[in-house]
Image (cartoon, rainbow, N blue to C red; front, top):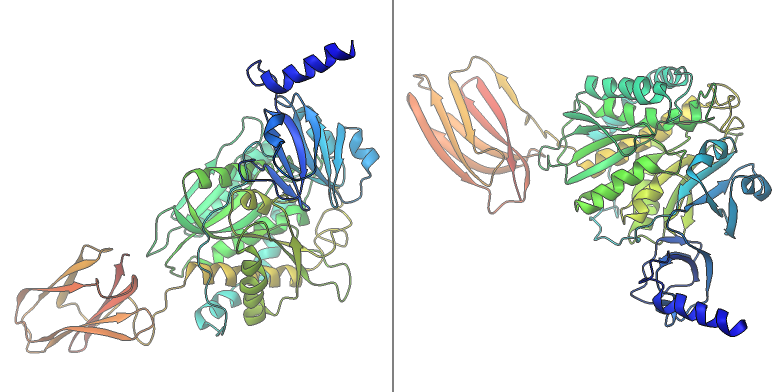
Length: 525
């Protein structure tokens, strides 16, 4: 009999894929050899799904088979806050233990029960961890105060934050399967994005069961495409799964951060596009953000940075009013993004106290982890100690939930500064800004705009006064005089080539006596 089982096992190993046998879930301790897909990185270990166990023969790392017949299984990483392993095991089978989480095999139908525990969950990916080329971060060696960003930070309003958080708390529940999430809350956020001048507002469906993501887009003047952008927001859904679920701290506070950023930045111009996001179904395993991140990766989107804010309204006691800023060493550049760039924004504009939290994997308990898995720079901003009302009906504006408006305001101000810096605000140095002074005897036309080579046509009424055309950069520095003369009346055409100048925003100033026009020119790469 023993020989028969050996033959069967050998057949499974050799012919398993051809016989249609399911994958194996394997834990590898250390860094596996090239060619082995890594589905999750956790605490120095890797999880991978393999068809053929023989492919592990040369990995040169210890490994363990955690499960077989994995095709229909749901695997979760469960991060306990106030729940024991025994409590989690009631809803599935714990396959493995890590420093901060359990690996649980369960069923989709058990998710609402898990949402009744004080835990966060994320789903083990079936796709491999990605590594992407990283965008250049703004230079931080000598951080100078940008007065325009100072203005933006100063416009963040505690009254606005509190009013919006209160409104979100009173949806009764934002659990992602309920209509108060899928319809009422999503539409309320949509209306906010629209009112605050987003160029595009849309919902993103990823499931027939759960509510949609809600996305607002402020297009950049230089890079208006949705292929390159800064991303800020947080998850809008909450728990418990039944009955009253106020979620004032988790995570109305993070959702409001994105909306307040949208409100504050609406009348400023930026080179890069800004995307505001309210993720859905975070509590069911980061589903909404993972859908967005996966699509972004497949479309080769360049994301300049992801600011994910989740629970930013609670301070436990004096001296604990710092924000945990999570980063990972598993994504190249992520430590610089958090420890240098974001830290510099706090030090320069808000003096927010930051506690840098190092991670070594791509897994995590909030939506930033979806972007880590897809290879993007992302941070999680979260209160240092979770509120006592976490995942209960006690998560309201008050002692057990959202209890520190000043802290939340400072976190949001820092987020606004970071988003603005990444998006590159367009300055109007000196007197340079789009304007019209006096009557308009001159009509200006710039074609094409945006472009690289421009044809500038101006039409004048009879006037003895000279006309001067001058190009300035966005900081108000003189770039090039184009025309200085007496055109008489009629059309005058002047060409300006931007081929010798850096891409960006420029301004054309036209003076004729006491009349001035200033027009924006977008010089493309």
